[in-house]
Image (cartoon, rainbow, N blue to C red; front, side, top):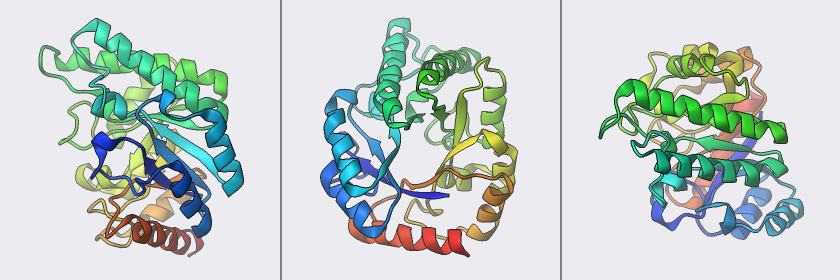
Length: 271
């Protein structure tokens, strides 16, 4: 398993669960200094980052780009994949494609989380789930050209009424014709929704494509009450070899959270 830290470039999301907030250069330099393998970037859109500049930053610091989030599609642009308005749904799909096209050449995945939307406000549950499935079909197929999957994230009940558990996520993926969509298992959301986090990871099995490595209270690992022993055992059982990415609050500050996470990563992956 490989270490990863999140960098947000979206001012509208400041105060949210991203560790680093002071730009790509500063984030990459700190990640490299502490020995991280990769960064996960949350941009306002693909045009906000010049690919050549990012490539140089990654190369200079010995880092990989693990993933790029699409969340600004909702947070900044108010686009979501279950919108009652077809034209807005199409704009949301185009935004997801644009993030895939930005991330793909780096060998990085695009993540759909908050953009999945919800039912209500003129969209019934079946229709919302159908719109989401259509978007995942499109994104999964689009990502194939880069030999990377599209990553879909179940969220807790307070953030969506679409898919809340890993088992429900597996069910959604099983109804797709594309095999190129994997699950993001976020340990914070799982702490709220799952009866047993380790068992849920085993249910995800080979459909688990990315992990958000975070404690029960959305603080860095080690600053909450999650028992990571069974979680790490489950990841070993499913032969997970991807990133453990810290999508956590910068508590007590960004530098301390980055240091705490890499200590926890090393402890749990070397135990």
